[in-house]
Image 1 (cartoon, rainbow, N blue to C red):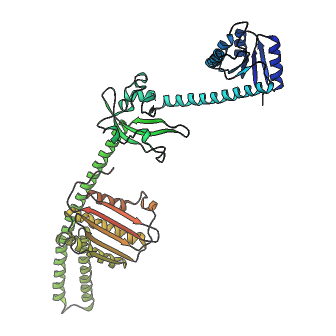
Image 2 (cartoon, rainbow, N blue to C red):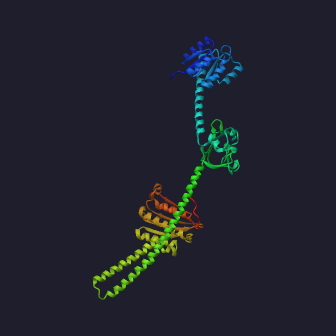
Image 3 (cartoon, rainbow, N blue to C red):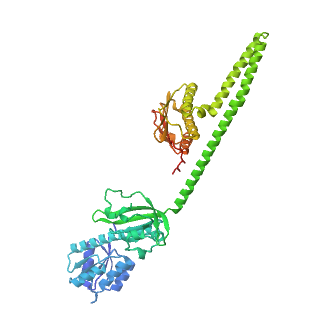
Length: 490
């Protein structure tokens, strides 16, 4: 490692030679020797030594003090004094000069080495801290977030340009002011009742970085700005509480975007509800037309075919009679298909007998189609849904859940239960299938599950899906019994 470079400023030549010989034996490199403060400063500016060894009196004048100050302030070069003076006035001047050491003549080499090493180490530490302070100060000054520092008494000791801009207070006006005066929250409770506790009341078991909160900042311009605030105590293991740091940012644009997004969500959900209502009405109309118009025509055709079969029976051969029976059977199957399609579009019993009867019929039809045991249970005294749209939505949720069971669950049993409490109606669909992971339930392609959530939300309720691999799936839908406007989802 390169030896430390020293500058010697001493007006007595024998003493200067002795110092040079001593520091060289100690392993230091001397970059220059002079007996003038002016020449010493010039040598220091050109050679940039690590440390200057100065005499206080140079040619009868105490120029060493001034030289030490200039070296420290203008070149950031530390210095120590070698002098024969030890009076109180000299010691006071040594402290004021910013010197890093003081050694009386005559001195021993080991004393000189200790003084030099301590001065070099102290300067290295202070230089490192100064660089860190400059870096942190520059970072805080350039930060877009406002930063305010306080002392333990909650009086402001620092605020950066962003904090000046947001609060409307200048640095000169804010320093020394109470924090509550500069960082005012509109409509806030007294300080003892607010979430922003005094730093002295913050205990060490609280989180070092508490979660941010939102507030309305009342500026010096009498304007209100929504801000996101993080406040934390500044602590030192030795000195304890040093103050508080407050970091805050303007969230006006974010609030505007959130409001626009919320409005867009509400509009989309209103559109989805309108489309669902229109689709259900159209399904009901088509089901009625199929059942009434097409059903009547098929019934009339069946009656005509039966009349034709009776008239031709005495004279018809076996082939014609078989053909007529086949047509009759095909016509019966067509009637059943028409009825099934009409019921799938809109089960008539949903309007006539209610939700419980429709769900029981759906469970029976599911078992007939898939062979999977499906049991429906209505709790005693279960209350009917608040309106027709709620009954339709719950029925469609059951249909979608059973479709998922048939396609993906590999289940052997399904249990559907309808029950009510004082204010809510609960629908539970549970199977014993293979289940799914949370990631599988959140896949973008799971539109059926999304539809369940949206149907429940349109009724002011919620839909919870609980599933684990190998343990089946349970879908629980809860809606209020009193009709209500669905709340906006955050």
